[in-house]
Structure formats: C-alpha cells, structure tokens
Image (cartoon, rainbow, N blue to C red; front, side):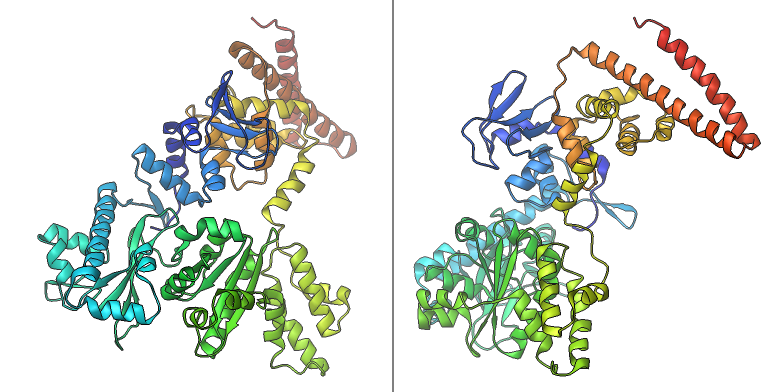
Length: 597
C-alpha cells in the first residue's frame, strides 16, 4: 500500500514498543546501571560502547557515534526502509499501519486479511510443489527443467512447482466457498470472470515462488511450458506484492551479497536458479519491470557494487539505458554500477552452462563502468571531430550529470566530459546545471560542524528536552524565544512546539520526528549527553534555563529597538513595543531576585 505514514501513528507505535526487547532479540544486551550495553553491531570493538536506554527509548554508540530510535536501529541493522521498519514494529505491537492518501487517511489492510493472504500463498505453494511430483502432466515440466540443465536439488532448493493445465484446479482445491474464493482473488491466485465464476491465473506453467527480503512468500512467477504467451507471468500487485520493490532471489542471496561485495542483476528467474546451480549465488532478478530506484536502494543496503547483466541486442541495450537513468540518483557514498552485455542469443542461464562458472566470472571483470557506458553511448552517434558535435555531447550529458549526487563521482564525470569535449573544466562547470544538495551524510557532517558553536544555554536546554520530553509542558508559548539570535534557536523553538501538548513522546519519538531534518546529527549527540542530577533537579534547572533565555531575548529586543531609535527613530507601534519590553525587563529582574523554593 502506498501513501505517507502519519506521524501520530509513529508516535503511538513508539510508545508501545520497548527498544530493549527489539535490540536484545538481535544483539544480546547486558544491564549496566539503568541502561543496557553490548559490543556495537555496527563496528568492530572489544569493549562494549553501544548503549541502549530504556528510559529514552534511544540507542547510542560512544565508539562510532551511531544513534537513533528503534526504527532507526531496524533500518541500519536489518537494512529495512522506514515503512518496512514501521510495519515490522506495528506487527509486533498488533497495530495496523494507516496511510495518508491525497490528504485523506487511507484504511490499512486488515491484519486478518493479510494473514489470510499469506496463508493462501503458502497453501498454494504446497499445492504447486505437490503437482510437480504427482500430477500426470508433471513429466512435461520435469523434462523441461532437465532440458534447461537444472538438477532436482536446485529445483527443490528454490521451491519450484507446477501449475497443471485446467481452468480451475487451484480454485476448486483452495476456494470451496465465496469468502475463500474472494480471498484467492485478493491473493492474485485466481481471476474472477465477468459473468461469474473463477479461473486459475497460472495454468500450464513452471512455478517460481517469490519471497521478500525477509523470506516471506508474497507471490509467484510462472514460466509457460511450450510456446504460449506471455512467456513469463507474475502475480498481480496485491497488499503483499509490489513488483517495483521486490527482487527475485534476494532473500536467498543476502549473505552472498555481503561476502562478494557485489550483486549481479539479471532478467529472469531461470537465470538466477541456473547461476546458483553453478555456484554463482549473488544474482537477483527484477520481476518483469525495469530496474527501479527502490530496487537499487535495497541492493545497496547489502553491497556497494551492482552489475547489470543484459542481452547484447537492441532490447537489452534499451533496458540498460533505462536502468542507468534510474541508477544515477543513487550513486553516492562510494557506490559502483557496471554493465555486462552478453553475446546475442545468449542469456546467463545458457552461457554459464556452455562456459562454466570460471569463464562466466571472468566476463564479469569486463563489465563496463557506468560512467564509461554513459559517455560511450552518448558519443556513439556524435562526430567528436566537430565543434558542434562536442557541444551536443555536453548538452546531452548535462541533465544526466545533474542527477548524480554531488560528490567525487560527479566531479570526476564532469572532468571526463571536459576531457572528451575539449572544453576547459572551468567553462564546463559554468554550463552544468546548479549542483544538487550535498548527500545526506556529507550535509549532516557539515551541519554538525556549523552547530558546534551553539551557546551552552541553548545546548543544555535542548539536551534536557530531548532526554526528558515531559519538560516541554513547562514551556508555554515558545514564540518569544524566536527573538533570540544564535545558532540552535530555530531547533529549540521547533522542539518546544513539538513537545507542547504531547506529554507522551519519548526520546525515540523525537528522533523520528527529526529523521529528515538538518538537525538530526546534532540531536543525536545531545540526546546521548548525560546529566547527573535527580529528577527534581532536572525540572529546576530547566525552569532556570527558560528564565535566562527569556531575559536574553528581552535584552536583545530592547537593544535592537534602542539602536533603531538612535539611528532613525521609532514608529508608534515600535515605541509601544519598547515600553512593553522595558516593563517585561523589570518583571524578569524581580523574578531573578526571587529565591527559588
């Protein structure tokens, strides 16, 4: 299901989930005072510096600096996207994930509906596997698989099955009543006829079960026996199955991707299975769609390098160019992409059976890097001996380079373009589009250095609010603090507004509110700062900080208006405001002199 997850739901979810339980189930924790500790799962260390706070619902490593909420932990440790992490935790808490669609709240898929769909898919999987062993027509399917060089062991390892000919074999087996028949439709297993009745979606096909990155069965792909069309048929989009986000074989290949530091993207299920049989176990396949950014981002969570493998014909080259376009925005943080084109009339399945693993692996070393492929393709039909030809190359390359995140690769690609076009780098730089914003980590590091000079009063107030969100109830109207000059003031006011009226937020919830904010690194450091004091002292210190900040805001406003009065005079409204501020100053001074109880 698409649509934005409401912030209120995320807040509610984080009040029901204990970060200690979630992390401890993956990284064994031991109690250390009021917190829990372990060796950090994100960097090598012998002495535990990874701390999990049950009070704050926040984790922080004092060694490598990683930190965040339980959602952030799942995203880093399990390589989940934000929606996937929320869904994982929602399932743990027994909550439904709502989505906002065009300003309205879309009803979430019911948990029992999803459970029914999952159960039907599992039962269908058993049915298809049994048919491959027992059905009278199965000999044709077995002969086809043997003809493609697949062993019984690899077929069993990938769970291959068989959907026999016949209009309603599966529908009659699993759909004995109207409710279950509709559930089969929702699962994408059968199709409802316009004039009533149901028929099987998959008939006369070798069946390939499709799992998501966590290993859950979410759909099927079927390869037709014989010459029928379409040759390959996938499950339709359902509440569980989204072709633009899933990759065939990813769950099985996860460890191999980490081991090899490389993913090979091919075009078909049979390619993945055949390559695995010959020992190349880091291949995945798209599911009948062009490679999407979601596909790439998921792969890059496991490995820094992706190699696309396409047929060398026109269709393969066209597919490669589409993949290149979707890949460019993802090329940051040292990621690499290459393109391997096979001889015409060959695919990975046929080629590895002809050549063997060693020769096929040697081909991978000849894959063309994305920058080289980009410039080779653009220059193929251009006469670079002409001035206007080189100018055309620059114009064709400009929009593509603008999609590459700012960084070393973009600079090197620009330098290569300058070399090919014989244009001075300084001149080319002025022609290229305005650079995109820095990549997230670079920008965050820059912001962290800029925030280093935040006045201590503001830093302390921020840290106390982050670690004790209930203090936000003491603030009242945060608007007067906007009058303050200095770094950290906009963040402080934004945090005050967030916490004003939301007494149930914890540190982890706040982190999620600021996940995409420019302040996220600074927030993480402040949330980890310790304040050794009793609970009553925390409140007293915070109230004292508020008084000091109000006095400073008052002083700065009076100074600005007084300066303007001396230079150019004040209008009636400004004079009245200055009088109000001077009276407020007297009240604040009396408050300062009043002993605190």
